[in-house]
Length: 95
Image (tube, rainbow, N blue to C red; front, side, top):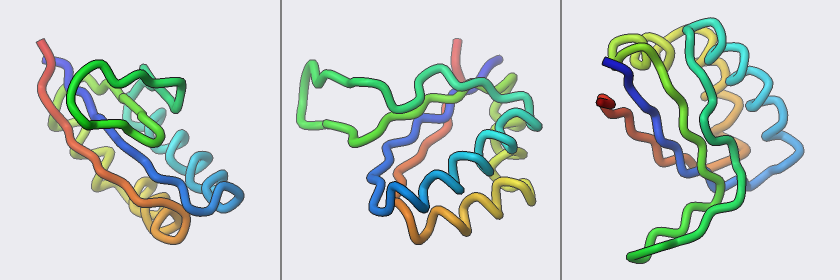
């Protein structure tokens, strides 16, 4: 069963965030993930949620998404992002 990772990002240092994006993309690719949404325009249809920068990733399953998140490669990306952005992230099984 596929799994999705949804991320709401508030970028605080756009220039430094470029390093995070490079590291994150390499890690996503290595662990078989695919970007479905990567920071495009959003429209709030209901409720008060208005993401700053929305990213949606797809992995083959939830275990693989967790492998990616806990990998050495993504751990390095997370270290870089701590000074460049605030994240809210969840993973969920798909259909």
